[in-house]
Image (cartoon, rainbow, N blue to C red):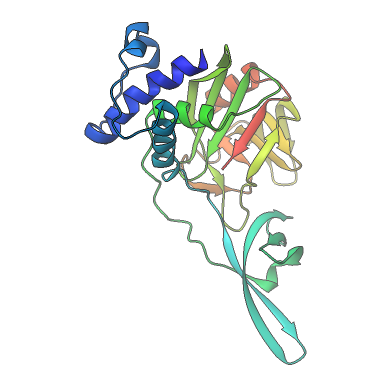
Length: 269
């Protein structure tokens, strides 16, 4: 099944990359037939089908960019002051402390020692066709303890839901989202859904969020925030507006809550 699916995608995507890369709509994977699999084109100098697949993957991978938040760390040693570029991994207490790292350090520091470099208003990257995303996730041999796999593309501010069928992950849902501000960034990496619930309350800040999925410590995926009496506080999507959690519209959060089991893998990129 997987080899046939790769072959099918290979035919379709090579054609897109050469002739219709900017087309907004693409034929559905499920609409293609077994006959297409048999009509494999002559790749000329390609040694075999997998080499062609590797080249297609490289083309897609070049468009998949991690949303890394950089900062300058100021360190004083005696009378000397040094500035070091670091990556912000996560924060505590709404940006009062930061977990930072680079090739040489992996530490927590106070916010007074950092100057964040990345701008909030960087435009979103152009979305990729669904078929590219399916090929990309399957080429990487995504793993999940459940039948589903979540991919959050922070550069495009989108949540993608994949379902495993006979060893191949098919894209079944996609939702816009809103991630953390640069001062309170969304934590990136591979995680599992640890727990979930219908609603949580933050009475100190007078808001609540519905349909939450917890994936790493304080980091959740949930609905947009509501006041304690039920009024929507912020509807912004595909922007960096949160304190680190991943927000989505309430109907999408509800779908995720009802359909995604704990122990499902989530990749936040």
